[in-house]
Length: 272
Image 1: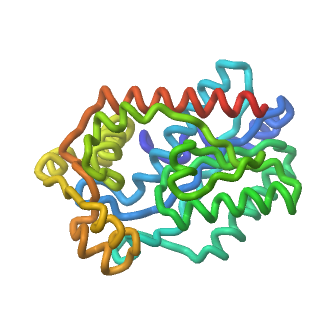
Image 2: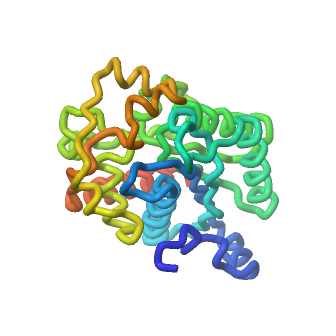
Image 3: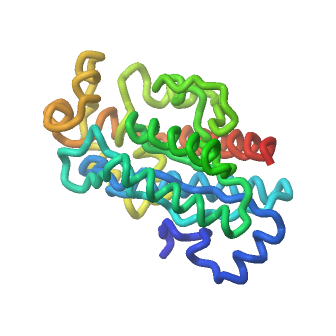
């Protein structure tokens, strides 16, 4: 159970323990990602494992600042519009995802959790846009204090530029990530995700296979085709990764994880 995504979440707590945290004014972190192929060297749960790991680090930092925190059960039935032609990439409809997440948010609100922060480390455009839409519907229509927190660069990359209370744009230092990935396009099961899984879930990554994989070196034209998903994406990256998995750098990814967790925790603390 050393790598359970339920570790440190409400799933491993009794209901009186949950009630006690709510009485103390606990907010909730809701990890949202997917189960998706990540090449021949990483498990299909990579995105949700890493999202839950960051939630755990954010909780530690908020606790140290005197804020009680609950981590909701990880939500991993999201949208894979790019890798959907690969075995292991589960995807659900946008309507199903919205209905499920709104119900989950409603449960947390009903129990007395007044602020809920949704975290996601799955880079699919359709998936990210849907979370933003869900946050808007929950906040405006259902009067639920649900927030989607993400890096400012990610929001901007996907055209999400609204200055609204339910979207929390966190500025992050991109220099470390750039130094790890270099000039090549490294966005799926490449250097960053491989290093991150080796750091936090070593049992679920195979460095021997990763070190034998060649960098994909996609051009911008290749990337545009890849982003269309389906068989076109599979033809561009037939082995299911985009980047350079062999470039494992545990020191760099540890600094990235630390900076990301601290930045997210600080931003949430301001909202609280």
